[in-house]
Each structure stands twice: as structure tokens, then as C-alpha cells.
Length: 500
Image (cartoon, rainbow, N blue to C red; front, side, top):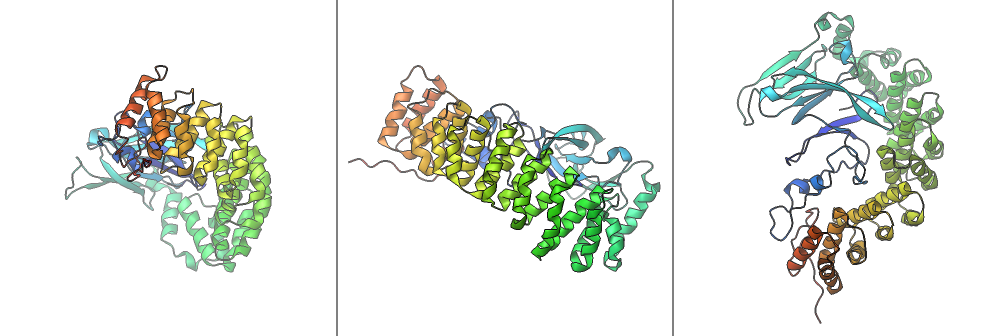
């Protein structure tokens, strides 16, 4: 569900694991929230495999914690159960206390434990923290909801249970003073109105309306008009008292630029606007349309004091594949020092999209831990064998992150032998690392790596659980599972080294 600034917020259901909780997520371009269907439906009943559950055992379902996998963008918070619907107050619905508020339906099979929750988000760096929250409606087993043109919230009620049936209810939830509100009456009229009959000047005024639905309707109509609507957008973006009108003007011009790139040029000056959100929005939409002539003007935003501006600048430069920005993106990642996960994501993704593996591999000797982590994440996205050099890192977390990249999601086959060999030389005992090294031995299937497994299993200084897994891998060596030993990803039959 989008808010008024185009931030996409969603709620992921859980995988039905004991102790797991659904997740509130900020969905950004190119993000990986971590979930895989094989976390739930993978290897756990396969006698040739183990029961290790990456999703739960590596705590990927939790908000960020020290040691969490770096390639994912973790959730904002764990929040409610059984999400079945989500809406955002368009600005004039319900009462004033619910402005800038999301609503989410909770479905747990019975009405007593279900209902509608409201929550707000607080800006935090380039992302958000969970703010004020409360349960606004109980005793309803909601399957969906939406705001009506009258400003009330309409909720579909399943009544009870999980199975299908031929009955249900629709509830109307509203503020006591809402129906008499003059603005809500105006909104209802405008939503029903035929905007193609309105003058562009009037539509330009409506870009500043209090209701998001009205603003968006005006934006789309002006964008549809092409050159006839451009003056209204220009007037809206030039004024400085109505920020949301400026946001919609940027979005509208970006829409028009999809048909004629010439329109995008008029956005470039606003990369230097005094309003930081306007700088961020301009970078975002120039990146969305991949307007490469603006790339050089976007680069300075990587040093902007506003986190969202840095985030969208990095995202845009990656989408533009602007190689001259690589060192500036690296500098932004170093300055971030791995503090803001959204900046780490945007920077690593941009470097991966630019696509030059050598300078990323060269970061293996850089003193900045944050840069080495980001380099591993970028090389993972590129599926680059150059990532193997990070197996030599002195930091256990970075080596573990490298092992995740090489083994998981079909992995990086060319780097698999190096990960297997690590089992015979590392002093690290991280379970996620060692399990993946064992998996790499099994996938590579060479006699030398079988001996590595044997030696590891006989070493009393190694963790007992990991020695047991090494023995189990040896036990299935001739005919291993067709599913990855760690993440359950389908591999198919695995080759074994021919005997001479």
C-alpha cells in the first residue's frame, strides 16, 4: 500500500513455523525480503537431508539484529497475524486523528482474535520505524477493506472459520462527525466527476488537494493530456508552499517522460531544490525512467544530508548503470558504516547493476568492514566467482555472508570448490558458515573434498553438531538429496568424481 510519498508498505504472511511472526516491510526497488517458498516446503521430509531451517535458525524473519544476513532488507517490525487486507488513509477519511495512518486486517480464523489494526510509521534514516498502533475494531473476521468515496472504511467480514461458505457481511466504520464534514462531501463529488472536462489550470490546483485520490486523479488526467498538461505541472512544481502538489507534479512529468524523454530534462534542476524531499523524489523518478542525461547531476546527492535523498540517488544511479558514479557510491557506503540497511541495499544494488566485479573484489583488502559487506552483497547479485576472495576475510560475519552467496539460491558454482576447501582450513565455527561449507563439499563431489569432510568429522575441536552433519553428508555421498543441504533449493542429481 502506497502512502502519499509513494512509499510502498506491505505485510508479509508467515511460513507457519513455530515462534514465527508476520512482518511489516518497506518494499523498495530491487529489495530481497528474505522469504523463499523452499523455507517452508523444502527438504524437511527428505531422509537424505537435514532439518536445518535457514529462515528460522538464522532469524531472517526478525527486524535487523547484529549478525543477520546482509543480503536481505529486514522488516520494519513483526506485526499482527494473518494479514488479509491493507489500506492507507487518503487524507480525508475517518477523523483527523487517523491522518497518515495505515490500516491492516488480521484474520486468525475466529472473530474474537481478529479485527482491524491501525499504525503509523516514523521516519528513520532512509526507512521507517513502527510508530503509534492500536486495534480499532474487534470481533470481525476481516478478509479485505477499502475506503469509500464518502470517507468511511468498508470491511468484508468472513464471519467465522477457515472454510468457504455462502454468506458474509460488510461493515461500515466511520468517525461520528465524518458524514457531516464538508471536505468529505467535496471529495465524494470530485471522485465522481469527469476530470477530462476540467481545465488544466483547475486540475493543477487539485494537485494540492487534501485527498490523495483526488490528487492522483488530477495527476493522471494532466499526464494524459501531454503538452496540454505540462504547464500545470510546471506551475505546481515551481511553487513551494504545497509540497504534495510538487510531488505529484514530479510523478506526472515522469509519466509523460516515458513517452517523450525530453520532458525529463525539466526535472533535473530540482535535484538541487531547498526541500530535501523534493530532491529525493526527483532522484527517485529520474531513476525510475532511467534518464541517463541527468546521471552526473544525481551524483552529488550521494553526499546529501537527507538520508532519503542519498538512498534514491544511489538507486537512480544503479538503474541508469552510470559507471562513473561507482567511487562516489562506494564513498557513500563507507560513510554509512553499515548503519542504515536501506542505504547499504541501495548502494550494493547500484554497484551490482553497474556490473563491474573487479573494483568490488578489490575491496576485499579495504579496512572498512561496511564496504567489504556491501561488496559481498553486490557480487552475490552479480553471481560473480570473484566473490571467493572474501572467504579469506578475517571477519567471521563477512566469510559467512560470502558462504551464503556461494551456496544459496543455486549459488555460484564456480566458487563452490573454494567454499568446500574452507572447511579444512577455517578456525571459524559459525553454524551458517560451516553448514554451507559442508554443503559445498557435497555439491562439488570431489575425492579431496570428501576427505575434507572426513577430517572435519574426526576433529574433536570442532562443534559436535557440525561434525555430525559432516558425517551425515558422508553417509549420503554416493546419492545425495536433489535439494540443497542448507536452503532446500532444487539442485537435481549431483555429479560425483569419476574413479580411475
